[in-house]
Image (cartoon, rainbow, N blue to C red; front, side, top):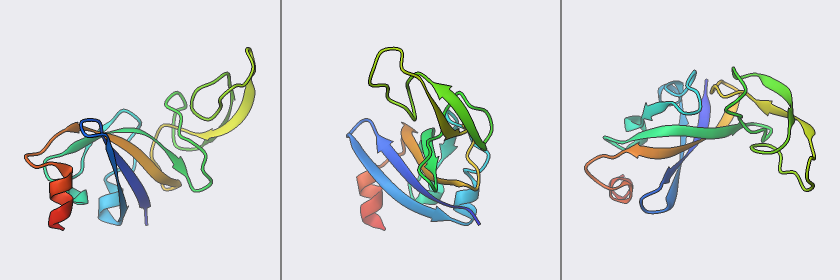
Length: 127
């Protein structure tokens, strides 16, 4: 059974809201990729949709948008997600996850792209 922590960033007010989901609500994210848009009514955010921007697995390995699938890959990086070089020209082989959300994914990062009639703060206060 899939279980995720979804971090939803709201660029309009600068807040990030965290949700723990499992079961049927979590299954809606399985198979989605970085850049996909997902409706999040199951999180209690009626009318809202979010864009998946990244995530990580149980060991903290980040998802990379340029790696296909959901499996682990060892890639040579010059910078970006998963490696921050300290010297010019520095490269490093790093193990990362692909861009697809799978059962090994633990955290999903997303940002709001479609808004409902109420603000997120108002919706969360009602619960």
